[in-house]
Amino acid sequence: MDNLRKSIESRIRERGAGWVFSRKDLRDIAPSGSIGVILCRLEKDGMIRRVGRGLYDYPERSDLLGEELPPILDQAAQAIARKHRWVIAPDGAMAANMLNLSLQVPAKIVYLSNGPTRQFNVGNQTIIFRHASPKDLDMEHYSSRIIAQALRFLGKEKMDGKVIKHLRNKLTDQEKTDLFRDIRFGTDWILDMAQKLMKDDHE
Image (cartoon, rainbow, N blue to C red; front, side):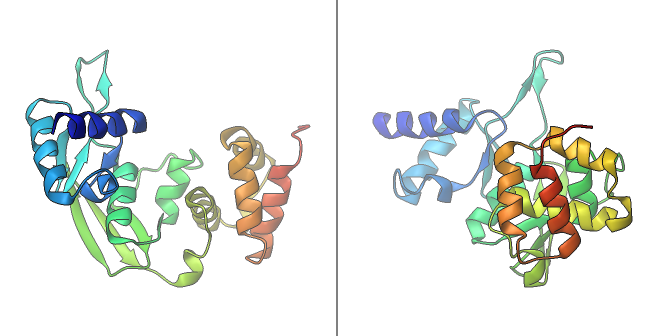
């Protein structure tokens, strides 16, 4: 059991502070029952905490405040999606906020999903999963879905040089490449945006 605990601890530390997970994320290490025993011990010892039904996180800690920070909701949403084998994307308002394209903080935490409409409590927040059309989720990469949802939320008319420059600086080269590949057969104006993001920034 000690070796199993070390393996699970190693997996959690590798994912880094803020990682939210369920037993299914550790099923390649051991059977669910054994994992549950170890997680209970790690929770008791303060390494991890339970943040929702069947959900745990490896909490981030604030050096300034000297306390644990609330669970990262996007990490929690992805953990729930992995657990249920759903494809998800934050809705437009949330995606725009995540990319700092909007300062407006959504009143509700909403994700589009190919699963049923459901909601989950995480910490003191509620995450709503809303069943969506396949066309809203047909991109392979999660980062591409975030970008596309944010751009649709803002609208074509707001795609000016300021937005392009911001996204060029915000996104990694890999995220830009993934978006271009994922959107090739999608909306024309978003494809145009992806092409512009791939170009060198001379502005």
